[in-house]
Amino acid sequence: MEAVFSLLVGLFAAAAFYLIMSRHVVRMLLGIVLLGNAVNLGLFTAGRLTRATPPIIPAGQDSLAMTAANPLPQALILTAIVISFSFFAFLLVLAYRAYQDLGTDDTDGMRLAEPENPPMPPLDY
Image (tube, rainbow, N blue to C red; front, side, top):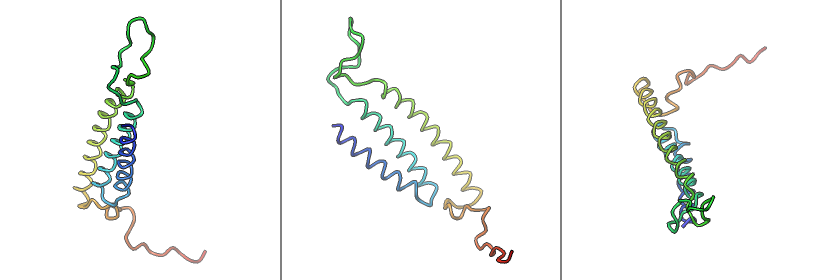
């Protein structure tokens, strides 16, 4: 089962990097969300996927059984989901505000500080 999830993490990461390298802000945002999901799924996969033994320490023992799922990555993933959602909401508001001001979501069209046809620098010093 871990092999399937590992391949899925690789597919998510590849699709995320493809979307992040796009010129459009909305695609970049979707790539960031997809990359966050790939990282969360990778953490979940690293925490052992099993249903055989619940992650409860039995009476008289000091640690979990080796067949039990690790509860720490699951807690980390829950925290990461909340943080990534708030980060996405913040970036979405920034992208929408930039679209309102500039009228485009193309990153090449958003370059206000750089003129489109800059003059040549002086060639004699």
